[in-house]
Every structure is written in structure tokens, then in C-alpha cells.
Figure 1 (cartoon, rainbow over the protein chains, first blue to last red):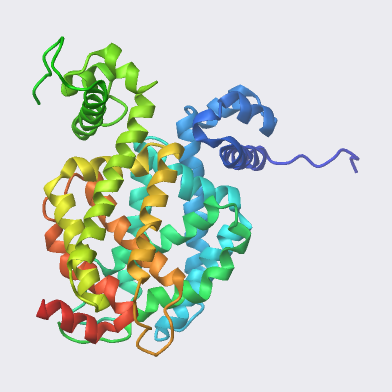
Figure 2 (figure 1 turned 180 degrees about the vertical axis):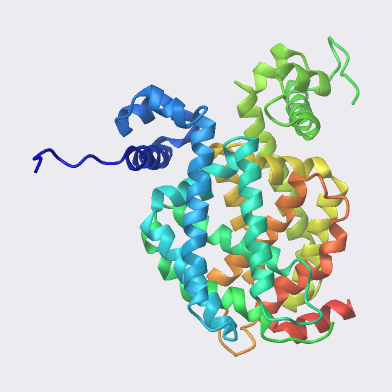
Length: 201
Length: 214
């Protein structure tokens, strides 16, 4: 039997490096903002060759957008998993579960949350468009998940998602991401109470 | 805007300075609404304001400094419209005062798209220095909303976090439309915005009754 160390498969190493660069981008943005962050900073902290970065990304913006997309996908996966665990008939419990997962994600990944909520809207037009599309996605999902009812304002879900995003990004801006789960009771009430009284205008 | 004639015009230096500074602020707001902040230059602002470049630099060290002053001015106008409407409403009751403030706010933004462009659109896009002002401006509406507000329909006080989320939600609705350049029809949003703002304190039924009555 050979005594050589087992080699990690190249695909695993490559994926790990890619993930590392994305995480480092979030760290650096949290420390100094997107504008001040340079490719040189990323490769230094991630311990990768400049060539490796440019094999994976076309440049700083591309890396930032990948970090945004990854963060969004990770958060959506956690929210979806939490909601799916609740019976679809239990709308308020589902909403609470989804919000708990979202706030938990923010607390567990403060740099990624800051990148997505604080940096992304102001990091150039491509990033702003991604951010707006993400908000639109949450609006659609809330509308689909909420109980049906006549006479509701067409903009209700837009206002609820906007208000939730406002509260969460303010929390992250304050450097209090770890305490985001404390927002759960009031945020849940904010989101579910407009759906309680259902009636015609 | 008329250019003041050069030379002796019998106006105090303070008046002329005030006049120039105000015109520069207006010039920045109007130019920004057309081309965005990045593309706005001191020359463009000066031309719009009929103020020379050297006179610009008597009032502001930089384009950014003029931007901050213009931003504060625009926020003051928007906030002033809401505050004045509350005071003018003559109603001791909370809901009519809030209704008056929301109507004034949406009307002003629809009538003056350049104000919406600088405060709501650029506020979100222009980066950290301005975002702090945007955040403070939005938060300043929370005490206006909560002043004299009744307890929620269950008889319990509405937590500050709820009204903060309500104000943030309305800001989001308005900002998204400002970014899209779609503020002309903000009046169409009135019933939606009023219901959203009044419901936590009055309950849906009472809120809808007030909106359809007035």
C-alpha cells in the first residue's frame, strides 16, 4: 500500500478557492467598503494567485456580483427549507419560520449580509439591478405564500418586503447583525397582521 | 433664472451670496435629475445657476459639498411639506393629520420629480456619505407618525419597530418609483399608502373606512 497522502480532487480544490475568494470579498467589503477594495487585497487575503482569480472572475465587479448571487442563493435556501417544514395551511407559522431563518442567516453571516444589503444597492448599476431583482423575487414569493383575500392593496407585499429590508439593513449597518434574531416577534407581526382582516374594500 | 448684472447693483453682499448659493443648490438638483450625480459637473451646475465657476468655489469646496447641501435642502422641503400639512390640518385626531401629511408628501414628489430624484433615487445609489442622510431623513418621519397615535386595535401600544418598518416600507415604495423615474402618478398610490400607514394603529376595517370617506 502506498503511504502517500490522498490527493484532493482538482474540482474540490477549485471550488474551495472560488468560495474562499467570495468570502474574502465579503470580509473586505465589510471592513473598507466595495469602492476601496482592490483585487490585490482579495488575492493577498485569500492566498490565491492573481491568475486563479482571473480564471474564475473577469474582475472586481464580477467577483462582487458572484458574492451577491451566492449569498442570495444561500439565504433563499435556508428560508425555503424553514418554510417547507411547516404545513402550508399554517401561514403565520410559515411566515415566522421564514423570517427566523432570514434573521438567523444574517446573524451567522454578517459580512455576507452587509454585502448583500448595504453594499450591493450602491456598488454600481449592475449590482443595483441584482439587488432590485432580489427584492422583486421576495415580493413575488410573499404574494404567492400569503393567504388569498379580496380588496388588498396591490402594493402590500412590496411595502412589507421594503419595510423588512429596511429594518434588517439598518440592523446590519449598526454592526448589530448578531442581534438580528431579536427582531423576530415585531417583524413577524408586521408581516402577518395586514392579512388577518380580510374583506372587500 | 435671471443673471444679476455685474457691478454695483445695490444689493448687500450677503443677499447676493445667499442668492448665488441657493441658485447653485437648485442648479445641482436640476442637473442631477437630468443626468445623475456621477455625470454632473461643477461647470454644468454653474451654467444652470448662472454662477461662474470661481464663484461656485466661494460657496462650496467641491461638487460633493454642494451635493450634501442640496440634499439637506431637498430633505428639508419634503419634510417641511409633511410637517406643515400636519399643522394645517386643524384636526386634533391622529388619522386626518397623518392623511394630510401623506397627501402633501406624495403630491410634492409627483409635482417636483427633481426632489424625488435627489432624495430617493440618488439617496440609495450614491454611496455611504449620502445614505446616512437618506436614513436619517426617513427615520425623521417616525416621530411624525407616532405623535398622538392611538394604540393598536388590540388595545396594546404599537411598538416603535412597527412604525419604523412602516416608514421604511413607504420609503421603499417611493424610492423604487423614483429610481424608475415613475413619480408622476404617485397620487394613484395614495389609498395603498394610507391603508398601510393607518392599519397598525387603527386596524384594517377602520383604516379603510377613513380612506373611503376622505
